[in-house]
Image (cartoon, rainbow, N blue to C red; front, side, top):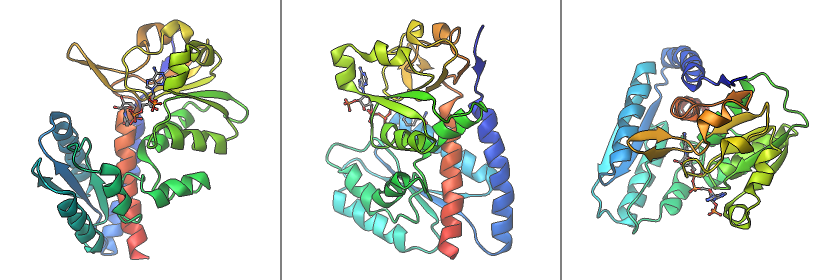
Length: 285
Ligand code: NAP
């Protein structure tokens, strides 16, 4: 039987509806959430993200301020600018758009964003709180993955999960959040792929999360019957956006599956908005 599609747009809509109410209440108390976005250069993907972030923010009452820098901006100039935003009381959240030019140390910049204004939830302090299972401003994509899994209503305790991809911002924090729910989790990465054992792991996954960035890396026939499949990957193939999982075959085997687009992406954006509102609240304390 074909899987139930996990509707990321619907879940994101529900989160945003709640946020709209919270923002109204915050504004009544004189707190006005705002997100400052830093864009370097002219990456076409970034331009699309920035437009969509601005629209999403403004729709629910968050002020969105875009700060654009030329491709040849220096590390020091960006550091100074982030320090200025950290001090500015009118700024609730900060997001540094990726990718950055090769002469810029993006991780270094993310590290200096105040943990109270870190809208993406990826500063060392916020990532650290994930270890203690108490994320305050949590890493957006990992939080989105957990929200999507939760929406299935499936009990997680004791389930076997496989996380494909161990990036700092997606794979690692997602693994920790699963662990906190007593999910037995295996983590696969490039060495698993090179060793040829990826299918073996995927086949046993009751919950499969894939965050790699390679179209059709996960063959549909590897997917365990009845699995929950969360596809984080975003790939452009012949002008279309696809995930990392061979969707058409996988959806015939899974019980729940996220589409790409329309799965993880919208919920990740909703988490960015949620963090911005939480950041505004934190700064009033
Ligand atoms: P990343 O930092 O490039 O990490 C990719 C991970 O995949 C790495 O851990 C890499 O391992 C692993 N990998 C590469 N080839 C593999 C293979 N053949 N078998 C197993 N593992 C392999 O990327 P990311 O930031 O986590 O993002 C991953 C994907 O998710 C991208 O397509 C990105 O665009 C997408 N994404 C989507 C959202 C959303 O909101 N929908 C948010 C964030 C990211 P090594 O490091 O060992 O090479």
